[in-house]
Image (cartoon, rainbow, N blue to C red; front, side, top):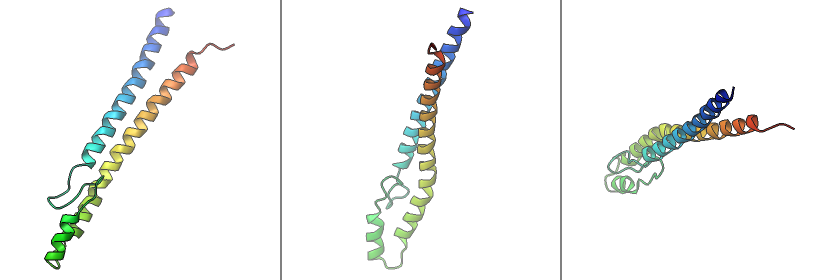
Length: 109
C-alpha cells in the first residue's frame, strides 16, 4: 500500500517536471526560430526590421524587395507564434498537473 503511494507521487512529480521542461524547450525553440532572418535584406518575425529592403526599393524603383520581405516575415511568423503558444500551454499544463497533485495529496480534515 505504501509503495503505491510513493510511485504515484513519483509519477506525478515526473509528469509535471517533464511538461514544464518540454514547454520551456519548445518556447525557447520558438524564440530562436523567430529571431532567424527570412532573407538577406529582411528582418525576422520577432524583429521585423526590413529597412535595407526598403532602401533597396527606393534606389531601384519597382524592385519589390520590401514587399517580398514582409510576405516572408508573415509566413515565418505563423510557426514562430505556434511554437511560442505551444510552449506556454505546456508550461501551464505542467503547473496545473502540479497543483492537482498537491491538492490530491493534501490531507482532508
